Image 1 (cartoon, rainbow, N blue to C red):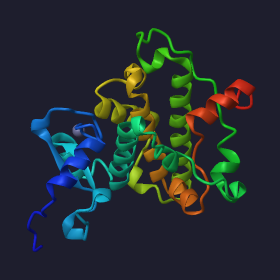
Image 2 (image 1 turned 120 degrees about the vertical axis):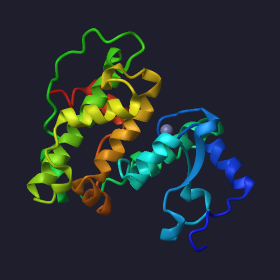
Image 3 (image 1 turned 45 degrees about the vertical axis):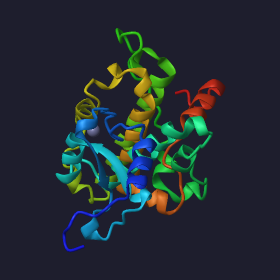
Image 4 (image 1 turned 90 degrees about the vertical axis):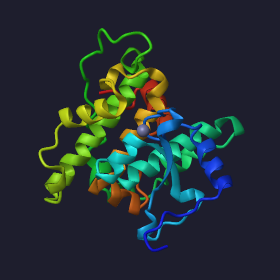
Length: 239
Ligand SMILES: [Zn+2]
């Protein structure tokens, strides 16, 4: 290929656009003028023109990927999330492959042992407008749960002394990144983007060192929303 742009067949192009509902898989931008197909693993790194390696991105998100603000894993998670949303009508449930992993040896994980207990009460949401995630208490609580989970994983990464690339991580940075990606503060994001926000947080958790280690051992990094709700109902996760 010698640095040349690869040739993706029009059939594959169409399929990839359909998969993401002709929207950017990351930010859902639907402006066709700025959308293009992006190789998740670049052609020069040996990435194929196969649908699994292709995703629709807007120019803006593409730039973020090029400059390393979005990782390959994040793009992949966004692709999976977009394709799940796009295929719901056809009865596919590909998301479950993403979120639900096998229980495995839970005690083999530092995180599974000590972080799960760290469910804390956060201040009650107040003043979030109707239609926002903040105004939907179960969804807000789940987002809180994932944010704390990410925070705890990041803290664990730091204790491994391998968290250098995440210098001075804190909650504010995560919220700022969310705001940049979703163009709204975390709990002001419209509730219809809940799945997208969850996918974003899950991919961040999975990318932590602890998250990757867990995954390699088939240890789950988080509960699904359904599991989380069920536990809340039975009071198991209540602080
Ligand atoms: Zn985008």
